[in-house]
Structure formats: structure tokens, C-alpha cells
Length: 183
Length: 183
Image (cartoon, rainbow over all chains, first blue to last red; front, side, top):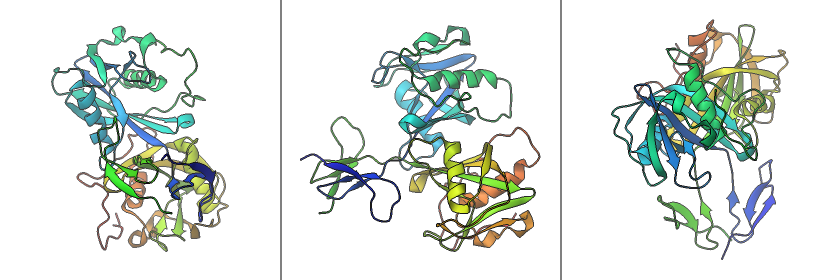
């Protein structure tokens, strides 16, 4: 049997939610948190080429959905371990982006690799430590990855900074034909 | 009919999730985002006394769950409007707290009231604009409210600051008998 959802306002609520006609289950949907890291070894940035959809074959910094029971920093470190076999020291919050259309909040931390020993996990085709002028801007997976890399560059050498937010007026939509913009 | 959930690992997944025995629905649960604001009118802070559980009768800054389709800043402004009838200008991110045990991420923004015209919404018993030395520390609703107020005080007069995080070693648990700590 499959769930049979209809949109209706549950008792005591004020917004319509998906309610299963079979079992009465209310599917509360709230935005999800993606945690990631812009991590360096010396001057080189840790990037992963995605082995999974969406955007298979494109490059990203390690990032993924925060899970129950972990802090944001723990989640960012776990994703880097899963996707790139990397051990990170997580530093300050680099950026917070709202991707409202798809109900996501993206948090990127500044981070440092403890060793240069990295290898692709199950969700990565390859991993690399690349210099700033070798970032594959036209092959980045998502706008927020591009933004986070620029945020890293913006705050270089600053010990105290405010985390970056969405570019003005940009809600993180993913235009058809989008590809990353070089600085 | 009620949902009949059992914990099992859905096909293609790697963690156990709640799956309904009637309809096969997989109840993916990820941490939820709470957005709030430490808002001032002149030197006074906007506080609300909660009309709903949990912690009915205790004081908080306006805050609540981020909804689909809105940015974090929009969510923080909406909550202040709903709970206190307040119109806010949302400023920089003041604090990000992980409350891992209950699967929440709390974001508090520094904000400014556009006018001192505030009134309790349905979820508030009363609202008040209080001076720092009149904050009811022992009657605050949650640890993160206390932390956010201290974060506000810490960064006073600074134009650029890093958002505050959890106090060292504190995962946001809610000890039995907890009450807010004065500075």
C-alpha cells in the first residue's frame, strides 16, 4: 500500500499540511539544514566530484543534510569524512544561505584538514586539493558552493568576520543552464 | 486509523527511519530550524511571555520554526510579527546554537524595531520592552534565549562580529530545574 496524501489543515494548526487518508499521519515538512565545509590544506581547497544525483559529475565542497542528534559542526565534519575521507578541524561559520524555494538552509564552516590524506567516499567520484586559480568554476554543482568559495576568499586573513549571506536579491534558485561564475 | 510506525532501514538508505506498516510512508526526520530575533527599541529589548506550552508563562525573545518557502531573515521577522505585533529590521546573525538532543538549530538575528508599537499575538500572554537590568533571568523559557541575550550584550557597539555558538561543552540540554542565569 502507498500513502494517500491530501493537503488539509490539521486540527489546531494554521497551515495546510499533507495528511495521509489511510492512517491520518501528518507529514510536517520544515526546511532542512545542509552543513558543509570550505577546508584547506595549506593554500589548497578540498573539493569532491559528485557520484550521485543531483549534479552527478560536478564539483562541490563536502556538504550534506544535518542528521538528528548531531551539532552543525559535527555534521560538517561527518560529511567531509564520508565524502572525502577527510579529518577536519571545524572553525568559524563562513556563510549561511537560505535556499527558500527548495526549503533548505545551507551552513558552511571554515575548516582545516588535519592531514592531506583524502580519498573518495561512496558519494564521490574523485576528490582533489586544488589551488584557488584551479577551482573548476564552470563545473561547480550548486550556486551555494560557488558562493561559499567566494566567501572563503573574501575573509582570507581575517580573524573575525561576519558570515556571508545570499547575494543581494538572490534566493538560491537554480537557473536552467546555470554554471559557476569565476571571480 | 492511526499510523503504525516501525523503525527500519528503507531501501537505498543507510540509517533506520520510521516506516508506516500500513502505507509504507517513510518519516524522514531531520533537525528543524528555529529563527528568532533579539530586537531593540532604543536601549530596550523586546520580550514575549509565552501563552503556549512548552514553558507557558515564561519569557522569550520572539522565535519559532522556519517554514517552507521563506528565508531565515523572513522567518525571524514573521515570528516577531505573529508573537508581538512587531515590525523589525533584521540585521546580522547574532548566534547559531545546536540543540542536538532535540534535533534543532536555533538562529538568532540582531534586529531593530521600526516603531515601539507592540502587542501580544495569540501565542503570547504579554509583550514588553525591557531594559537590560530588568531582564527576568530566572523566568526565561529556554537556555538558548538566555544565551542569545548574552550574545547581544557581548557584541554591543561592534559593527562586525562572529556569531556566537553554544557555550563550551553545552549541547543545549534542558536540565530539570533549569532557570536562566543573570550575567
